[in-house]
Image 1 (cartoon, rainbow, N blue to C red):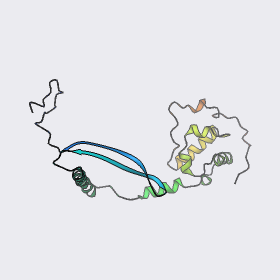
Image 2: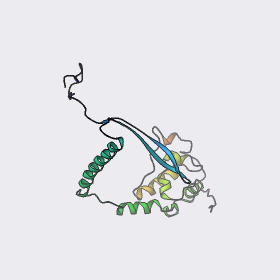
Image 3: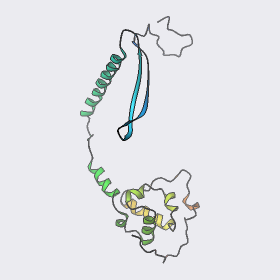
Image 4: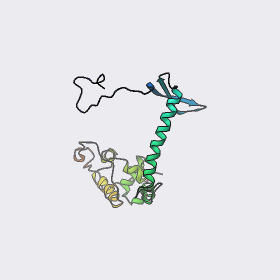
Length: 189
């Protein structure tokens, strides 16, 4: 320990006599690989340098065994945990049903509905993935339409995606769009 002690080492560092690990160095890299026609596989290349007392293959096998044992301990902790249910929950199923709900079922005004359809927004899930800034970029979709959509989503317990930091809807060009309230576009199929 005296030989491994470094002058000026930080407080709390404990020098040990020696390191007896047979593994000298380990490097790894992940490469893309191809299996038949599929190219979305990865290959792990591990380079292990060891002392002569152990083969690299045995070192990797030992490390794998240790890792499996440690993950086994974590798994046992989870089996006795209270309040954790594995698999899809009832809330997830209800949320998925709400997200798949067509925007027709929101009872929006014709203008709001047509603007969203024209933009390719067909479900509530697609709608909540948009921010207020995104919606204001839609032609003929102004502040009244935003307020209407937000009110419908809040009644379902949902919100629009957060707008970018510093976004002020009152400064957007479409915020107070003075469009004729009697204007109605023909529905597009």
